[in-house]
Amino acid sequence: MVVTVAVPTETSTGERRVASVPDVVAKLTKAGIGVRVQSGAGERAYLTDASFQAAGAVLVEGTSGLYSGAQVVLRVNPPSPEEVQLMDPETIVVGFLGPGKNLPTVRAMLDRKLTAFALELVPRITRAQGMDALSSQATVAGYASTLLAASESAKFFPMLTTAAGTIRPSRVLILGAGVAGLTAIATARRLGATVEAYDVRRAAGEQVRSLGAKFLELAINAEGTGGYARELTPEEKAQESVMVSKAVAEADVVITTANVPGRRAPRLVTKETVATMRPGAVIVDLAAESGGNCELTRAGETIIDHGVKIVGPLNLPSRVPTHASQMYAKNLQSFLELLISRDGALVTDYTDEILAASCLVRNGEVRHQGTREALDARA
Image (cartoon, rainbow, N blue to C red; front, top):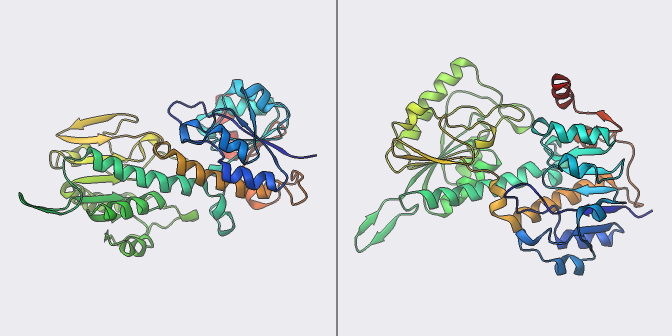
């Protein structure tokens, strides 16, 4: 039997991405996989229905017909509990599922006996790089955050020599040199700013310097597992605070990108530090959705405190929907290569370490320990 994959229109507020793109659809159909796309699914990413049809997809109006008979559903964001009820039992859902924040959807998938894979749970190992949707979307977020900062700033980023005199370049500080931070560094440098960056992982220093930025360094090595930083000790936090506060006070633009998976974002910029910044300075907080790296950040809002503009953007990748969708679709294509065997059948044995780690629910059972504990706590 041919495996049928369904791609719905995303329904989350402000979401412009789509889970597949025509180039990827063409490769899936060439491999013998049937692809259904909800009419209008790619419209907000500037991908037409006609382009999906030309790639071999079948267009379907509405979600009921889209899901009926589909073995796999590809999504950017989790389905609503109501959408889950439209899917056949044993349907496989793949996407960013945010289980800790979407427990009603997890419960609905359990009751419906769906199988769900959460891409944020894919382990960061070499073999899984092509499926690392967190990194691909962080790349987009880092780029978009820098453009947002430049548009909100009261100053030019580059040095300019004009008839009215020489304009000095802006000083941009990037806190956190993971994928988003490194992309923000590269983008700010391309825009002509003077860039400094800080990360608690010493290994990040070489990458920061290779992009032409100055690396702020403490005698701390907080390298953790999976490419993330470990939590700092109280003494280390005190050292970090002194150095970061000084750098923040001198910056025209601060972009914060520090996140710890499954936990509240680390607090890097206090309200007292904000008060020391120059009026007209800008903070763009990429960790706004997980509590914020700045004490004053409000998710989804822009506020001004002591003349400093603090921006708490939501879903930055959606600001660059065409390329964000393209990168995400390729992540899903790589994941499907694990999920669908070469003879075109769905894999039923999830012993592969990537499938095992990312499997959220299956056969009415929660496979992810953290989600299981959260559901038990709510019971």
